[in-house]
Image (cartoon, rainbow over all chains, first blue to last red; front, side, top):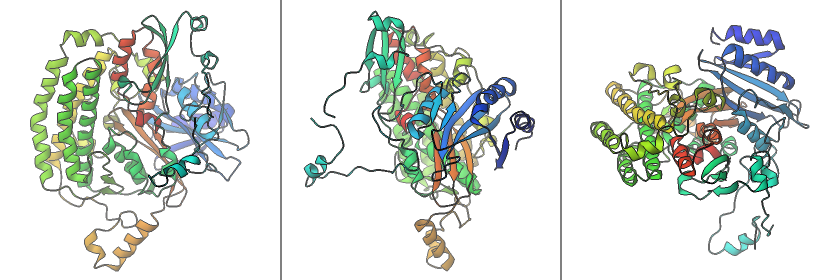
Length: 170
Length: 409
């Protein structure tokens, strides 16, 4: 871990009782969903983490408690530091509070979270799907969502496959 | 499923102004098949006459599930998916991916491979900026720019074909090095380009930089302040045009960028013209890096000797039993990566291209997340077009240089 990052991590650990994991010089802090807004506000205002580089999740299915880790990757341009915050959430009705008030870029990223993982974001100003069509069922990046494919149609079997293709027909 | 549902304004009520509900302003779709959106992007515009009141981007038309697909492939095979991500920056995407894999499994890369990586990603940056310059010129009715820029881009694509056999979907960088050493013609091809290109940049500039029509369309249009840019996660040339000196090649050097002497062009105006000037300067800086890297390019191996992760060369397979076993194991099973997560980022032509790679102890990644710069850069669009004309929206969209393959993944 970077020497300049140590006091910042220590501060968060003391204030929120966060667990720390280190791998290849990267620091990952584990927080509870209800702490994330306070922690990110603190990091942005006092430690110059002005950029939310990424906001995503990982699905650990079939494990259910916690099933997901919601991941916030922060960057400080001024101090040239990176910090990752992970928020474990359970599989039944996964929920995190929105951080759009702290980083505006979280708006689209949280819509992606909702779309791809079905993790509800409380207080989001615009909770619509972002990449998948509005009427799509399921959340593609969940591990229990199968990886599908499209049958290639050739001239000899075009009509046969066309009949069972699930797209809108006249 | 056969009826076409009528889209009601109810769905977008929270995004448009109150005047749209009474019909005072007009809602208009721009795209998804509009040439100036540079791909398939739909912009729902709320217009007061010619003036944009609100702009609601609708993305996902090009979503191909690249992250999901990568999670179903081994570490070597997943790399081809990264080419299809941002198709203007295939070498850069390969670099981001192989660097993440190398960080995850702790793999060394020989110096010659690092040098080649720098040369080719910088050529790719030039090619990407040329497409941007050509298409944004086209959007502003500078028709001939497109032809000139594609002429030079062709030369770069020829170099890519020379080294990898492919013009666009290169997959040339591999975990632990590059696919194979470059052919002897490589050096001359790059030197030819280095010789010809500075004059060509001057040519582009003489056509555009002081052209009054061009300046009219660009200056004071789409102002992006430093604070808004950071709030919305904008990175790359668009951020540097707003006065933030942040370039991952300088801030966190990778692939030996610290050995090369180059500047990071920045501007403070934050308008469309500033973004144009920053990218033009970046063309020159990238060329400087290519030249230095080519002069310094050491001889030696181009792939790591660590046989647990890198397949042995063809010549060894016939004579060594171990080499044959390694070859077989690597191409049937793949290599395992530890149960941990890394985040590694590179500076793509559009900004911070980050890759979050999480292994589960097996040969396939548990999670691949691509932090693509265009996604965040497009997010800020609705903020910077407010109050401008529809025609200016085209200029602004061109200036933030989005690639829809990069956004929709």
